[in-house]
Amino acid sequence: MSSFIRLIQFAAIAAGVIWFCCPAQTVFARNQVITHVQVIQASTQSRSIDPALRRIVPELEKVFRYTGYTLLQDKTLSLAFQQPGRIDLPDRRTLVLTPTNSQGGRIQYDIRILNRNEAVFQTRVLLKNNRSMTIGGPRFGHGVLLFHITGSLP
Picture 1 (cartoon, rainbow, N blue to C red):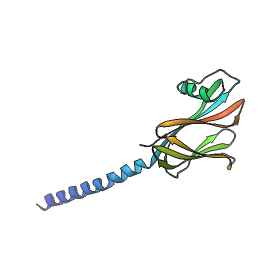
Picture 2: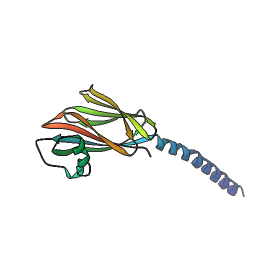
Picture 3: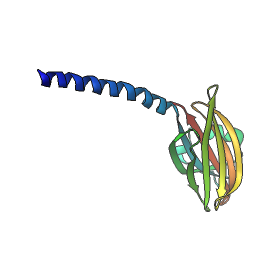
């Protein structure tokens, strides 16, 4: 009989621990921002379009006047608010994205470009949840770098 009581006590404790931990995991998941970044080289020297970018090229062509687009990097970061995410760029540059806040279905990001650890560009954007935007960046090769950023809250 005492082993049966111990089994019941253990099951009750285990259920309590599981119940207590599950809401914390849900809150933790809500505080994560899934940030997808495509680093693109845009150029007027080429008419080549990377197949991985075909879906977003019509959007790019509405805003930018480039004829060629090459995907250099495709990264997904899971970041907590106030946690910077870093992406290494060509020429010893670094893109730093930090989700800072969420308000009204929008995610606020602080975005910086560092050149050898010194900030050369800084902006703050509000991005609708599950939407994307493209930001023009520094010159690279015969064109420029573009950053196509998508932000999602679970």
